[in-house]
Image 1 (cartoon, rainbow, N blue to C red):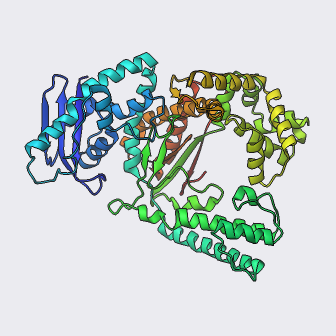
Image 2 (cartoon, rainbow, N blue to C red; image 1 turned 90 degrees about the vertical axis):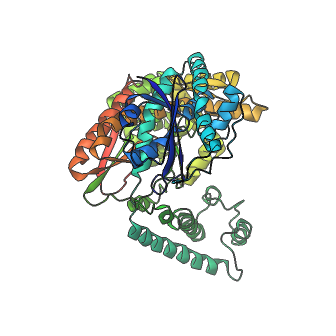
Image 3 (cartoon, rainbow, N blue to C red; image 1 turned 45 degrees about the vertical axis):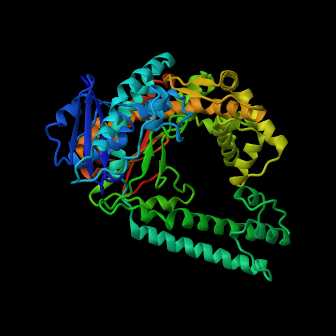
Length: 550
């Protein structure tokens, strides 16, 4: 398999509405080729699909080649993704990773990008444009050479392999898009407006004779205080400390207003005029942990408590939406890497870990654990791995409508650490390692780096991140391995990959293929998990529905 260096110039960023102006290729010997205004690339298709393609931000090039010419880049090396991995995630979602940046870093050359927007279909290339097109290729061999040396030094070969194999699946994801039921959006919008207006009218009467702007934190706080509610602010966390009709109405108002302004009023604006679907931008190394991020719109941060919202994401007629996510994956990973006997036993015997934790913390038999005790313990189980201490526990429980004091919160957290000594030991050791070395590594070999702390506050932040990032990042590795294999099996069959949210993979399949799709996704997710979770079951739970269900 040979190496081919590739870049393209286009009339814009959207492959559905913009066109490819030039495709430039270079061999390892330095021979280059520029193809202008191609109608088809049938003669190049075998070479592009069967060789390793090297480029910078190849997701962009791949989308145009896939949508416009039916070419899939299966084997890739992306210098953009590699650079973020080498940085230990410190460059994730930040500046410093453009082609201009990496050429300067590795080749000590400043690229002239003035011709970047001058390429047009049907207009011959100028000599300056030809030089620009070749310059975007000629430094790639040296960049790759130096990056591979750093990859070897850091032992990142496996991580790079995972990322590069996942990239074609990300192209599949972005080209698939999600279908939105506009009538359902309108229906929900009407309900939210009614909820907002009803709450606003009630609050206007309660705050009378004063006129209060409910969107002004200052005015709202003053109004609450006049109503003998001694709130120190107007955040949900703060007002949840209090009860009564005013608080409930204010919660209703805030929920409706946020859903309207952030989601319902904007979502239909993202529908692509060509496909009629919403195509988010997914950054496969968007977070330091290696997790995906999403933007325009952010399909990873959709309302969770307002469960009706997800019903706007409907399968097209004749299709079904298949949603799969790992069961309590971060807790299973934590139990595995910590080698905690109690976690391992619980998951092997089908014991509810949240009930088990409640039983240990509150010193009651498992069968006598109350619903509230389980809820509190669930908050502790998930929060501990994020470095949560008393303030965080009190805040999280307050959101859930449970009020406890500082002393009780401290006893609960201490009870957790006593109940699970191996987890306690692991979290302490990994946090100390992060603070000491400013670098940690997950079980897949992924490196996570931190900037050297300037003070105790930054050091404390590194300790907290060091507890959770190895867990989050290993989950990200599992999901990427799974989606790469799912792509090879299901993309050729017309299945669409429509979303991914941390440990969740969402697809849209023809109804006749829905069950087979569900079986493949479950099989591949669990197989990817079993590579690292060896001492307990790794379970992917799958649903088939007409909309995106959680």
